[in-house]
Length: 368
Image (tube, rainbow, N blue to C red; front, side, top):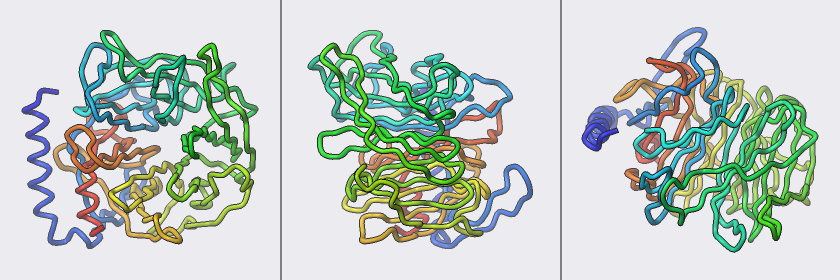
């Protein structure tokens, strides 16, 4: 997207947000019925969006991940300050720039949820690792990818290998760090929880050691790690939001943070993501049943519910029926204090895609 178009969208969104500022901390009601229903929440707007995913007329776009670099990197010959990865659960993995434009597509099969982690060295070279739950028949498990931040030329995300599991239908996926270890957490459609420690062997191939298995209870998907509290959050779609320990020794022990309930978390309880904003840490969920996004502050003794937001029409169309979302605090390309990327189930033009929301808009709307 040309720079002037991106700037114009940011300006338009900021102007509309200023008109909403007076009532930003109050919830507004967008009543509707059936597909596209939007419940109560503080209104915010996306500032830009990605192109529609390539699978036309189908439920395809699912879950994103966000990564930002302190120095410019090269993706497929284009310089960028990071990227957004997004799954098309019918065909593969997209890589987008912070302008929303596609940088790369990998036709990798039935990938559902994706996440990214730093701190992995492969053959003595620092790498970014991406992991995605893979439902492709014959390869179910976790598909793994690498990106070389120091690469040049046609440097892109590349397939690395996989983690095989006994989970019949991999659904949710997230990374979490414990000290120097990268932990990979897989959530199965039927509520299976599997946790692995991911490393690279001397030959540079992926190696995974299973360190926990537990049963959540019923259909589950969204998961997110809060490394600051050594916690793991999981959404059981028709039950509610659970908090586990990220320490695999904690086993199946858990606390119900929020049951499915009208006005807070409406089934299906879907995606989860965490965001660090200075000393504060937040958990954002997707209340898919009423197209809202509940937010908890999680750096205290217990999660503290802070309210919900909705993404309404503005520079781009609003968001409904979200499957997955991802957030990153601090400088993220043109977003100086953080970015939230949200899958949109019903796009106004074309098929499903991903919307970019400036974290500052959410923080202002909820009075955080």
